[in-house]
Length: 260
Ligand code: ADP
Ligand code: MG
Image 1 (tube, rainbow, N blue to C red):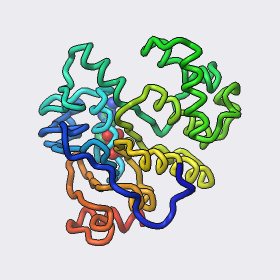
Image 2: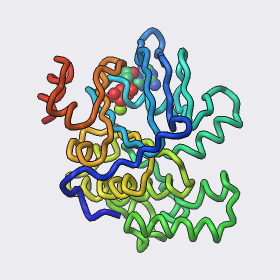
Image 3: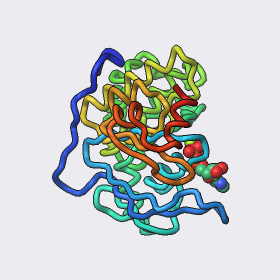
């Protein structure tokens, strides 16, 4: 894993062959009468790292929640690793296993230890023997640099540590894709870096990632592409350097003036 948010952009790991890791074709979603995703079309290649930004309420969370079907879209198609998301339970199970998700609120089980939080899904969903699941969990807890916390409970850890557990827990399912929804926005400033460093390490390992974040330093170092959403639409997308330095729409210029 990398030392830190260092200078320069880490090498791209995009694989051109095979189906896209994620594909959205003209996806539309409404909550009641409110149109929250408008004709979203998007492809994420295997190994690609995409950062999604945009004002609050623009549909970023809804879009990534649709990708692992925590929410359902009403029009258009979403394919994950070539499989279309439908109501078929088997394909849903397959997709949930391939896609790891990390939320703003860490969502750890408070009554389970760190180790138990990490082994729960491998044991019950993947049917992995307990001993193997524990070995795997320890491997990932070492990677996020908190193996010594394995037998504590979430409430005994700092926010940054809990978020790293949440990342380790997702990795224990051996996902092909990781989705992050504002993973550092609930953290105190001094803890943001340790979580971003963990994510940089994942990117260096070639993980396909979609990250909703306003951490521009992270985006500049890691993103192959930045997507700017506003009012349910993809308004602009491009390499970080283009999006942050040469915005072409007034909506993106306004957004950047508010966050930078
Ligand atoms: P973002 O993550 O960009 O802040 P969201 O995807 O959370 O935006 O929300 C997009 C819009 O959908 C907002 O107007 C929000 O209030 C609305 N919304 C989000 N979740 C729900 C829900 N479960 N029910 C009704 N409206 C929702
Ligand atoms: Mg959100």
